[in-house]
Image (tube, rainbow, N blue to C red):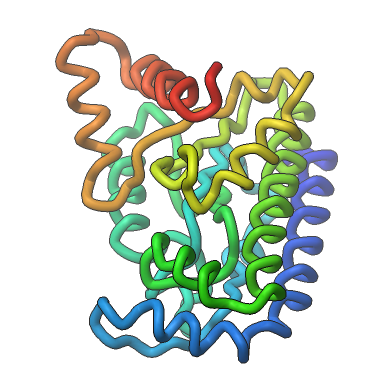
Amino acid sequence: MNDSQWNVFLRFRDEFKNLCNQWGQFSNELHPLQKEAAKSVPDYNLETAIVYNKAYDEVQKTDKINFIVIGDNPGKEEQLASNQKYLVGQSGRIAEGFFRRNSELGTDFRKNVLILNKTPVHTAKTVQLKYILKNGSKEIVSLINESQKKMAQLAFELHNGLFSNSKNDFPELWLVGYSELKKNGVFNRYRDELKKQYEGYSSWNKVFVYQHFSMNRFIVDLNEFRKDNNLPLKNCLEEIGKIHKNEIFGD
């Protein structure tokens, strides 16, 4: 990163860390809701209700950032006190393998990608946020809704700041996993705020939407597209990302 990009990243990191510290005041109220919401999944140690991504503290100014990848929310492995990093479970391992196998993308998933979520509030499965929204206090409901809006704002500021200070049209922003971005989805506030933030900015052209890495859905979707499209990988990714972007944002 150049000096301008590094300062953009530092502002993002520090603001997000401060927000997680502030939102942490709701941890005691969140814990029983998160446990109850997860009754349908195998038992696990619930250790972190609001998850800051400690991988940000390992980023160096010399790192080249090619992609910003935005998942849903921290899952079981992400919230472990020994981890507290995003996309370190099965989905992250699939993503890591994808970039490793496709060297033409020139990307180490753990070195050249900044990983964000749509909210730092943990649930074992994303859909369980709906249980918390239904059964939580008005303060908890506000936390989940407002954290989405704030994460959309931060994602835009980070991406646009890095992009506008780049000489090579990078980084791209990838929204991976979009079922809950659809109408009545738990992340529709994130969707609307993100679109609002990008209005009038050319960096919007470098925002793409994909299937989630989990259950190999990203790979399956890519392979299906490539059956009928004899294009280089980068072009395939761009076209798929535009198709799903249009499904979610209408453009």
